[in-house]
Image 1 (cartoon, one colour):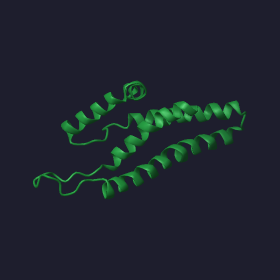
Image 2 (image 1 turned 90 degrees about the vertical axis):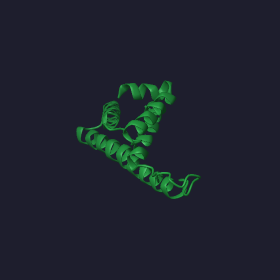
Image 3 (image 1 turned 45 degrees about the horizontal axis):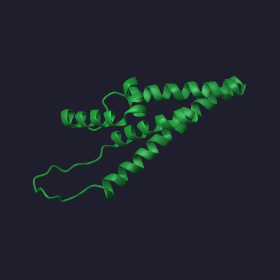
Length: 129
């Protein structure tokens, strides 16, 4: 998990190669484990706690800030972006009726769209904290 997060910053092509290998071996683009999401939620929680403490907010306001940062700023936006991009990519960006008549119909997985969002959230998060 931490290897993925560090590689996204220094060598994103390695993450893509690993994802491509995962597709070839397990026929699935998305990651099997939710470890990256859990770690990102942990980092967002720590950052929101730090902001709340630095601003000397009351405990209830810090709890609200943490809940808002995790549930809305991270998870709700991630679900919304992943859903929109999943729909757009499956509806408008796929090649249908290609050169091969016997090719297997391919679809973009929703969980892969969610993974892509999480991968792109990480550098942005580090840049704004």
